[in-house]
Length: 163
Image (cartoon, rainbow, N blue to C red):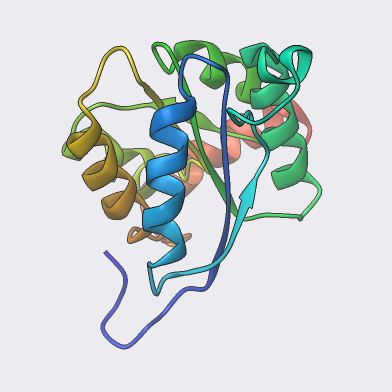
């Protein structure tokens, strides 16, 4: 978790395809009330979208979130689809972005502390709503330590990508 007294101010993207929109909306509400989150950026989809926009496929959501993080428009993203796998694969296509699908507290913790993941993905068809909400709250509370033993391993990945 974060050090005592330290209050990160995160800009968090929230997005989903049509298979994850209900969880996206609920987690977005939670994040807006979280003192660690300064800004919540909704990249859709939304139930009020036009039919073509509402059916925006998961690759678009994952890539858009990854590009926004890469370009400095946000610090992190929480994305939903049916399983969480599709949006994770899509976000991971953006150089320098690390996305992980997680459905338990330990994996959520390690995604940040060991892997400095900027994107958490979950599946609306896989994990219960209350668990998804809890995991999102936990995830925004973790901060990667660039002096940790994991930093060297991440440098290998960054060097490979040329980032």
